[in-house]
Image (cartoon, rainbow, N blue to C red):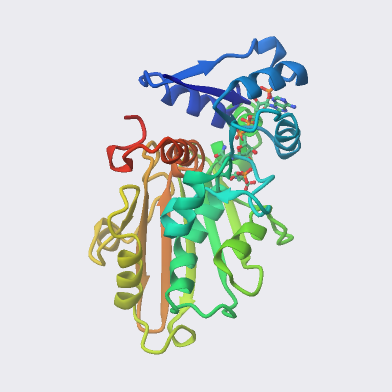
Length: 315
Ligand SMILES: NC(=O)C1=CN([C@@H]2O[C@H](COP(=O)(O)OP(=O)(O)OC[C@H]3O[C@@H](n4cnc5c(N)ncnc54)[C@H](OP(=O)(O)O)[C@@H]3O)[C@@H](O)[C@H]2O)C=CC1
Ligand SMILES: CC(=O)N[C@@H](CCC(=O)OP(=O)(O)O)C(=O)O
């Protein structure tokens, strides 16, 4: 029997990407909402409760509203918004972090897909804390370079408009007040003591991102080096089809550049460890629309359905 899927917010950037991914899957039946009624609460309620799995690809307030509409206790909700990521009773949709994370996704009916910047940050910080290399009281900072699709359809239209401001053609720092919406999950999921200092940059290309975490070696576990940090990460993610920890000699160390759009269009994530005896930078490169949003959401769905993850996302 086919799995009935409803995508609440299917006209948006993340929703469209999820919808496209089902084009070649015959195990899924998509419940289509009349586009005119896509914001009609009663119509959404009908669709949600008729589904086996509902993806929420909505702003936070609308996501909360959708969850309040669930009456059928068999419905599994996979939410791509920020609304429920640190809420009790919700699985955090990052299966590679630990066996417990994967198990909670598999058995949960409420799954929150990580934020895109948070995906990069947590992919680096979680294993280093869990394996005792990064002390929990380390004052962690991070910077992140993202394509403009990360900000949704209105920002995409603004960037692609002919009369856009001149400033759009350069990278632009934001969240300058240190209030970015991903800070809460970055701290809660990794277990670090303080909110990180986080500096994101939105740039003039469509999709893809690099999130970097700089570290002083003398503030890490004694004896930590570029090699030992890389080995720790490689061991943590061993056998994971969507996360690759690169060897120290790679195309990036050769060219000296790590492009934000390098993995645009791919669903996985690559981790690079660079630096020297005193200072290390660990960077996570991926597609904000792939492992950073719709790819991660589909990965969670495949886990819920018990599929073999090594076959990829589109089966
Ligand atoms: N873009 C990205 O890279 C990532 C996005 N996310 C998160 O995913 C969610 C969706 O983001 P994104 O796709 O980029 O956003 P978009 O703005 O592109 O799409 C949001 C969609 O939600 C619809 N919508 C808004 N309010 C309602 C409502 N009350 N009822 C039904 N539909 C509604 C909008 O309708 P309309 O068509 O009328 O505008 C739009 O189609 C957000 O929470 C975002 O933060 C997470 C990770 C990465
Ligand atoms: C470039 C850009 O603007 N990116 C968005 C993050 C997109 C995302 O991950 O949003 P959710 O937390 O809702 O999942 C931002 O920084 O607000």
